[in-house]
Image: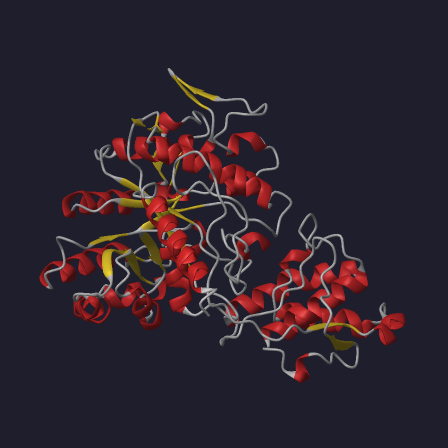
Length: 489
């Protein structure tokens, strides 16, 4: 014991030094902590992952008691949220007051949770919602802020609404940032909302994803999604201003839209921005590292944007870890936004200190894994690999587990039919906690104790944990992935 004590002390000193150094560069930097995982890391481990990496701000998507207890005493500035499915309820003031009591006042004690914002909904005006939340969002926002004020929290805690960047655009006849305007069907709602935010002293929160600009348009120039000015992407010239990346152009389109309705100086906070690492040919760790390198350098320099030069922009990265139970309706990349893997391992170096020297983030500590066992296609049945049973069983496995890495151009996209089957069987087996019955598949599968990973394709061993994918996400996966495997098999 005496021989190891100095090592422990030295490791502790390095951990403290790392946090101290990181904290200096992230005063305006936060991260989104999503929890839609089949078998997630314990909240205490996640909270420690935040503190070990110097994050002083976090945004969560509810106010779950386990998450809040883990954040208590950390001092991390926290944005809690009213989920979209509760907006109609808190549009009633008594319900809003009760929500604030249960989710803000409850944690407002010495050593409690340092709540700074309440996100009222999440992208409620998204086009895909077809107006479902249009009539309840602004009343809910006003009620939550009123309840915060009456409970004595209003000076320190502000209510905001994270909106998707699709709430504003420029006309096709003049597609430049200076022509920015709010989308016609929500222009009145947005004007009412920003007027209220301006009065309450809260920022407007917007989610901007350069990756989605690239994903949604085959003609979009790859280099225009990044900040480094490299490549052959043609800049956008807007009068005397030249835009060399889509983030600046997108942000300034919003600034122009705000100017158009008389609130051009309203503070704007970036609620989500990031780059996924799997699930699409452009979702790679290399491109994610390139994106974050440019973003973090920009934030450290406080360059702002052409319409807001030198502005300090508060930003929440999306996201902290991969979430294998998210819906893949927008694309298979949805489960791979994390700067850490599902088990808290960093994916690439990040310059969180803002000193121009990217380093690997600190991995999660205290992670508990299931035994090192994998479920794969039984070699004895490999001769029957092309029969209908295999296709049916692979489809079943992938409708209940995450197989998004198997897509074209993804990390496991080069596997053959047998490799696809093994990956699918293992994904299901791990998601089910390695119970014996989860590795049968009509006799097609077998449990092995040698790592089944193939090349760059990782066959993961899951965490000791609990929970199951959200039903809606499972349905979507089945719809998206089963045809893929019928083709591959």
